[in-house]
Image 1 (cartoon, helix red, strand yellow):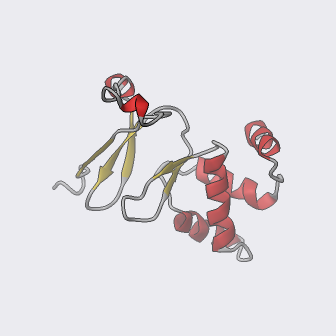
Image 2: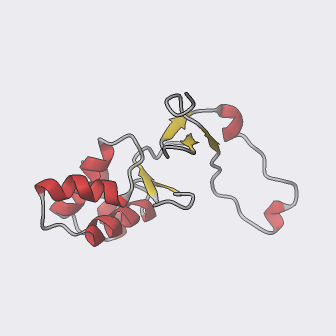
Amino acid sequence: MNRIKEAFKNAGLKFTPQRVLIYKLLLNNKDHPSADNIYQKIHKKHPNISFDTVHRTLLSFAEIGLVRLVEGYGDAKRFDPDINNHHHMRCLKCGKIMDFQNTAYDNLKEPAGIEKQFKVISKKVVLEGYCKKCSK
């Protein structure tokens, strides 16, 4: 909780019950949920919270580095509470996203000459295929 308070303070965001609720739910959710997934879970117990509040809050969390944004690849954006360096495997059938670690991927070198056109600040590898359940 101290981490979130400090991050909010540094970003100039208020420490609100809604933001804390959204953050706690995301931290306890390891399946890279979308804003709608989070909203559906919160709305059951807190019907006054809007989807827009959940969505804007999650985007704010990503902007200040509390969560990672996992691109939806045509689907809804997904959010990852694990901000440590890691990569993803994505099932093309069910959409499940799984984390994995790989030092070789962490150390991928940018193509020669790219630094003249682009400043790389992070590297992410996404493996696409079929999860164990869907490959049967």
